[in-house]
Image 1 (cartoon, rainbow, N blue to C red):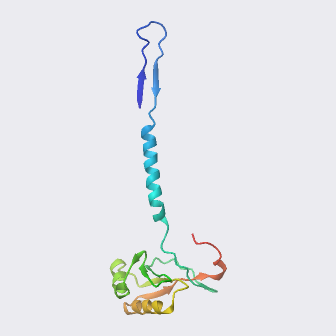
Image 2: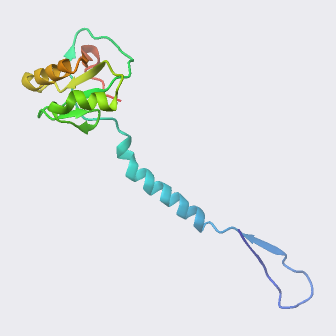
Length: 145
């Protein structure tokens, strides 16, 4: 905060007293820096990959915290959000999530069956259970959060 006192040039009489001036430039600087940081990190807050899972009549809700293996429509394989090689999938799950006994498998509905079968086989060899992620038909038209 900056204060200034004005002197009437040595004149007698009423003095103007102290005039308080607030310098808002540092406040504006901080606000602009926070705005830039928010703009740069806003896209990171969105979760995961865009995978359109198949729609089925019956599905179960699950609240287990498990690793997520995702297969995109082009067949690319991800462990949570990191790309992973199918030959190292079991070891990567064990390395990152040592106590995990099973994983969620999210595959795009337009993915051909061959990569899905290979992933299920690789997870089975690593003694990991597979829980397939689907979307109920009645929620098909609702956007994901």
